[in-house]
Image 1 (cartoon, one colour):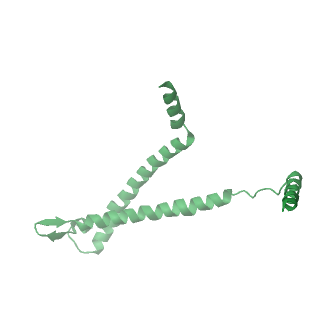
Image 2: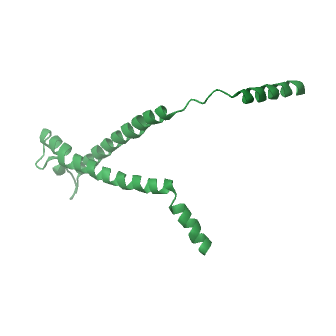
Image 3: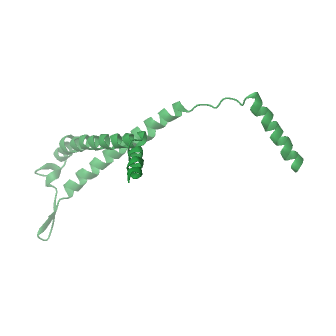
Length: 128
């Protein structure tokens, strides 16, 4: 039992796991900000441009006795698209650029490595 607790402690306190937890928390906070941007700024403007009493919130289709609020769905789709675009720009473009900048060109082989490679090639040639 004690060994299991020690293994769990080592796993939980690794840097990668803590970094992941921080990233998830920041992602949730970022999602809330984007959600607020879409619901309180973008979609009200869309609602002013298109017909409806309550903007996009009032967009509904009556199916029998039920109403289908498709305006809410459109708001969520816009929310998703904005989050996806921002994540793409940040993760793919910005981090891709940062990772390319970090790429290190390997140094040329040392004199010893060159000699070892020549010996390896000579041994291969003798076997063939």
